Image 1 (spheres, rainbow, N blue to C red):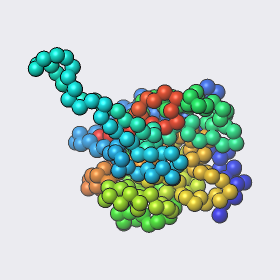
Image 2: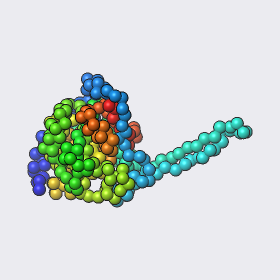
Image 3: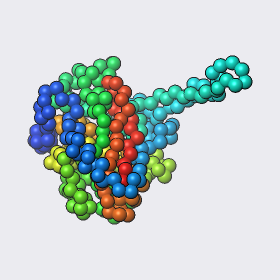
Image 4: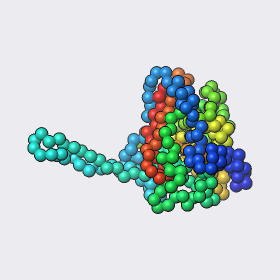
Length: 310
């Protein structure tokens, strides 16, 4: 087990507070420069596109208990073939309304999603969030998220379709996968870490997808992200990090290291299966990634339909 003192040492090593100025609210997304985006565009060869999102429906991954109150998206009709005017030639319209958590399915956690010891990223007080939302570090502050994506297929590297329960994705594991795939991770890249856990969801086994402990990031994985200059990280599971944690005296130590200390956006409930098959077929693990979240003002998270273009 890891002590709080050991975790504090790591937190100090990966902290980006003040790195981009006292008023910064974008964190590691500052590493995505125009040069990085041009490099990302150059990875497109065939023009194939892959959605990395779950479908939005009542059959989603939430059950209202993992995070209290977090439900699956509810969509219902406001109008069904209602007339827009008089007479037989009047157009008819249909309309929908959706009620959903901004983190109900495939999403990014905003930097305001988690605080620690009274502070959020860059030392911003946790009090910047109130009943009206996040006045600082809302998901809209992320801006456009377009960069080179790299799939680190941990499950594929292990020779399995799905990592076993509780598999620890450590810094060392990430280094091994990077080396085996032969693509160095560079500053400004967005990492997609595949555990294969989303396969449960795709097979219709939502309880299996939710069941803990899931294969996920161990406490030292953020050091790898920091050393490589990663701009954002997404996983194909519910929790992002190991639960229960390797740091038993801290709640969500990886969330805090990424969101609070580094200012690194993290994504959950992504789906990588089709993309992983394509990458394995031609051994190309890089692509242009467009993953801009919906701009819900003052939101602590953002639904997203990420698209990888190869």
